[in-house]
Length: 451
Image (cartoon, rainbow, N blue to C red; front, top):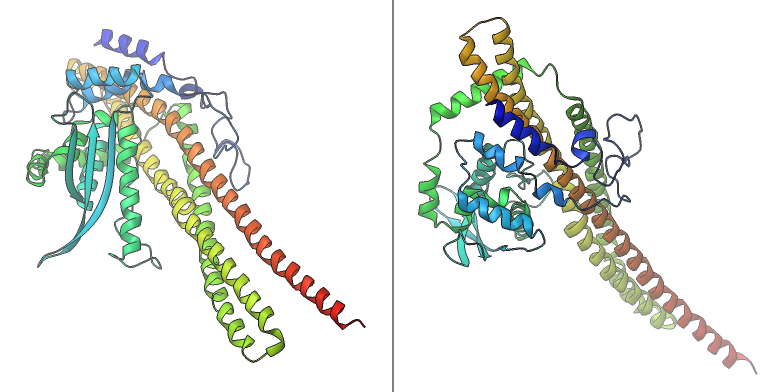
């Protein structure tokens, strides 16, 4: 056991620098939460200008695979390890392509639900074929997410869209809602496929390839109810005890998560409010075009002018509608996804603390000799390895997530800024053209009036 701990320590020495000192791989700012700045988005939380190095070292950290050795639900197969090495040697070679499309409504006497077609194309050797097509409902996605959390408790699992709709949004089974959910499910699966560890999860493979009855049979092979209840009781007991000596780096990480959660929730609320106001402005502006056309019918001298105004308003309406589409399809989903990520991160930290709390309780029991000393010593050795692997997995995945978050948020706001610039340029050009034509018209009339 001591030899395993030394080997695990040797592996952990290859972690990115940012995993240990709370800095990004490119030598960026330390974690947020240690600063009292009240800016909307602190540079430590959403560093949109920082260029970070490629986190290639993450995919080469063997400790992420070691975490599977502590999960009876997720043994690491030799074939999976071979493909893991292939993936690490060629990080830019994508060999798994997933598409979620063709939502289909199902109505039964008990319930109504939507299924989505999932097409998977791959060149991996552990798959029986190069292409698969299955249909899955939302409950199946929830099952997959739960299995990933069981097998990799301290990896950051991508979030799923909420099951229930926020008040004020579109109704359930509305076409817009279904399409929004389809896109979110598509992103969920592709984020897993792009993850250097989650992509080789056996349950993920079953989800992509098994027919409905096979998936149903596979779900029944999980731990029984009593086993799950026992795990839940132990987790609750550990969380009630709490962690007395959480490492400083994880204290900083927890502070970052709390600050990030506050900021991204605020950005989400502001974005939703902007979209709502934009929608109201658009609905009101649509009425002005027809009004000017009707007005022109009663003003013989202003017919051309009023119709030109109506035409300008219609063009601005189209430009506004396009900008709203970009807002609803690009910025809002990107921001809200990271609202969900903030909840995921809190859950990951809680699971890490539960593992450490279990270790602390065993060490305390050994100190007071509350049980068999030899047995406790052996359990403590295993828990020390488990905590170390969990910590290493979280630190490496944290840096990967942080870089992705910065890139996604930066891209969303940059695209929105460019869209706004294009919108105002288009509207300005429309009205400038109108004013120029009116000026020329008045000049012609003045020249005709002169003797």
